[in-house]
Image (cartoon, rainbow, N blue to C red):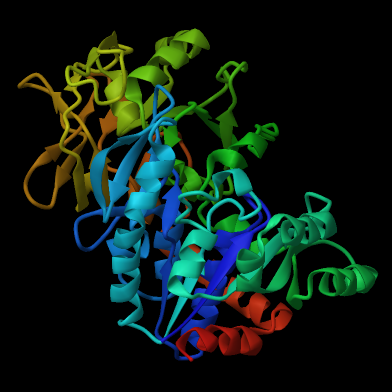
Length: 487
């Protein structure tokens, strides 16, 4: 078994996408490859075949590797929530919360469980492609680290450092990382990759050589800005800061408020591919556009806190006005709970706030419960088939005469539709990826949707990404490096 780990000079340098592309490139070469991330921090997650959850980035990487999702691919997942705490998920299951007071010691104690997953995973494949988190240069977090050098050294996995040239200062960030690492950590790094390059590569030849000279690391390639990346799901909410509305140009606008603890916002990605539609992620401080044809309330890691924030922003007024004027609203998971009458948290799962009124657009009442529902689902809604998954901590009760949003394949009902048919709530994530359902939803906006399953779009983008990386990275040398772990 071989392995190589990719760490970054910072967050959002493109590690997740590079790992996904390499997983597909290696799979296309006939290798049995699996992704691994010791610790992830993200509110975007996916349900696994063994009944747990992992970070959405590892789910994409598994898809790229043509492998079934498994909790061993991401043994520790931290999901930020209210009151400056994170829900701790270990081997796919909730195991309490972490805060600043117990963060370091709790992480250190998880290393044996991380290594258990690592050992199981590497026995199943030819090569494991590992992704770090944040940056090893964050030496203030080195004590108790299990995400970067703490794992690399414990598992004996060689590291390649990724730098993002698009944000500027890539030479300083790579050389600076070498400067701040202690000797043993620095020895784990065997090379670097420059990512997101725009322009003529010849203009950076001296810079590339300068990095090699100053660090003693070899370069594995210069990766240009890749168009396929825009068609892949995004892991972190950082990208939402750049997702401002650009003007409809005659297209139908779908607006989504950017809640502070927004979760699984990749639910909305399939809408970006619809040519007659503009998806507008609305940041705090801006009103929800009155010209919106549809408002989507997304998932959240802290429903009560985000419901309170929604009111602070005045978005409740915008949503109610949108409904009065004949507009449509779709709530997914926490968004569904917010559309109801009440949200109660008697066990303090999300923090100190215990009860809050919802928007009252659906006759639904929710109680948050300690047990998390995690399951893949299939069903029919708006007379169209869909597949997806549930991931929530809550039980919602409805009147006996409520009109269900969806009929599930197991015979159960899901969600609710308001009597006027313009407000819909569901616990099903991922249903917008199903072409027939998305087409049926857009028909209610008088649009002709493409009807294409989003999975085919993502798969084609992964193949394109792999082809690009084959041209711009020395993958043979990366495989040779990975095989040193097994030597």
